[in-house]
Length: 281
Image 1 (cartoon, rainbow, N blue to C red):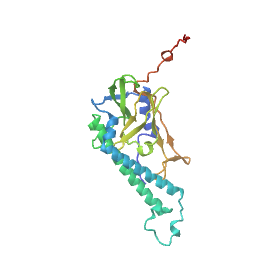
Image 2 (image 1 turned 180 degrees about the vertical axis):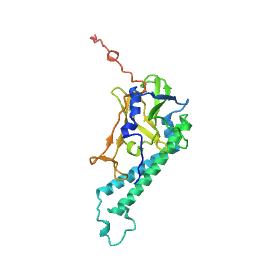
Image 3 (image 1 turned 30 degrees about the vertical axis):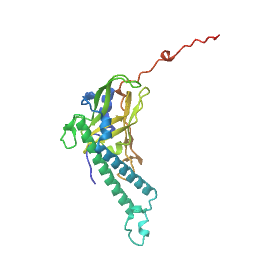
Image 4 (image 1 turned 120 degrees about the vertical axis):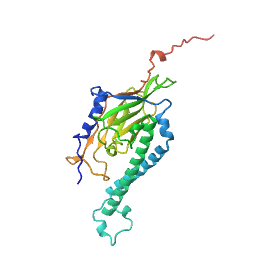
């Protein structure tokens, strides 16, 4: 058995200061860093070889965990003892040997995905002008989990929001590792009623998982709600965190954060045209 102590009683406690920052009630406000001139985070991700590798490793991990889930559905605890001799490759079987083999394969796939994610994080955080935050640096721990944003200035274009400040990436920094294996698929960035929809988000964390970047994809305009979801049960790949037999689920949501100039609404009066109809001849 291995136990790790923490200053936080629950996951929600670990991100409580971030929630307070968004609400404007924390002692430390949300820090804002200017993105270096000419840097476009989404363009950087599109062209970075590290991001291409990360995408491949993500697919490998998702495939491995799906294979594991399929095995669990057909699992037979007596399968192995019914075999006349040990199987050379138990991966496609339905017993305990197959379960152990696929859990190992899924763990390896996760480690490769996490390493590729950290490599992309290191490249992007450097491009954002913060090389002191890369995985290899001994970064002093913040007093509590904090949220910062990387911003740049934009000008209005036809069909796009007006000029102003756009958030290109959000940075989470915690004194203890955040459980991204249980978080990354449950972390959401959703527009409020008047905001422009996003095409998705990209989440990158450093090697020790204490720092992470959340990149909104698309053309942010207006305010968005960041939900930092946590799932205690993500399947047979790692231990389940349960209470009363049910997987623990926590979904702390932040107050809306403006990521870009709000969408300009055209008034009804501006779109109303009056036509005079007359008789010809």
